[in-house]
Length: 260
Image 1 (tube, rainbow, N blue to C red):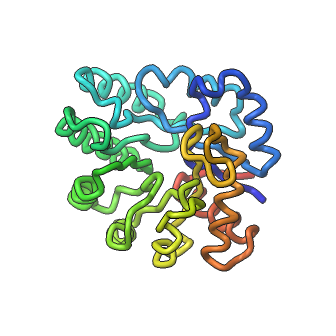
Image 2: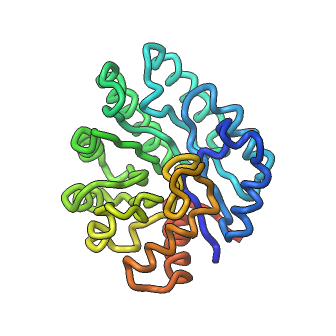
Image 3: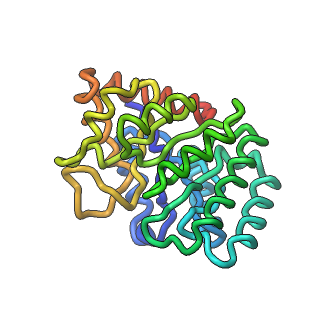
């Protein structure tokens, strides 16, 4: 199987002690590519260092994560935007961007501003976006629906919405990032996925977060994506190899990846 983890933060300090082994396990599991979304100014260096170390297996995105939209967000946005536009050939998408109203609503207006601005970058460059949404589905969907002029494309990372959100995302022409949550015992996601065509699904881990069953309680890593594709093959009543082929094809199309 050839798999693509479309969302992993493998450059974070949680992996500093055994990053090489983590990469080896991923490659042995068939994970051919790992797409790395940026977080803020401080994460650019570690992310790019990892992409230089594993140029055949890691691809970076550039963006400002919503939970890092603080008082200095304007300075961060300007810097991150400059990095993106000065080095567009290095990046495959704009991310991780979005709105998160779960932890802190203090900067809600600034999060919306940052999100809209970064969607504008993606539209200008023809890049897909990786959208983070938490307690903010309605706000995000209204913004994307307002700005969708045919140029916006991307993935709703860690999708955990219901049937109505799924319908609106499909209408926008976006993809659904599915990770470990689909394997959780009380998750409603398998039911919702029955209303989503598999052609709109991409795999992700969000490593080191949200590990799938049977790894809950551990640090997540890209190798664990095999549990996600296995569960999806059950949801869609197909074999694992076909689910792997289809999701890899979907990710390749969305992120314009040239796989060997």
